[in-house]
Amino acid sequence: MLTRIYGTAWNNDKDLEKYLTSIEEALKRDHRKLGKEMDLFHFQDEAPGMVFWHPYGWNIYKTLQNYIRNKLDKNDYLEINTPQVVDRKLWEALEDIRQEDSLRSPEKGQPFFVVAAPGRVCTLFLFCLAPAEFLASFLKTLTVLP
Image (cartoon, rainbow, N blue to C red; front, side, top):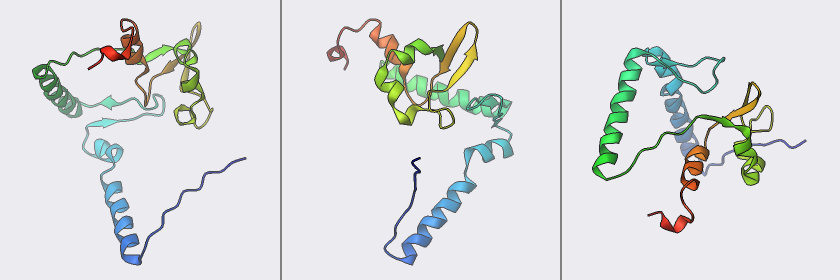
């Protein structure tokens, strides 16, 4: 069995102390903690990775979303919307993704699947698989992209 070991090295105690202080500061700004404390959103074990937005948090989200959309519109970008849950066949069709360890569930060693009748579907994460399928539906070559 392989085990990953993580470590850091520092030239002197001052650099180490600076690093440890930055870690402590980052923990104070943890979005999961702040979101709950500020009544912006929360997470639940029953929906891993899914955000339960509270009214003020949703308002901030929509404001940021509108800001980005205005910027995109001014620069002639087009927006698309793709599913967040897709049939597992989409993942299996791409062997290199299916084999990529960084895209596997640490618990099961596979992409994040959820059971749904009549088969299993997978949720998208850390990779733009559905938008890639969207582009593939009408592009014959990547040379047409800007």
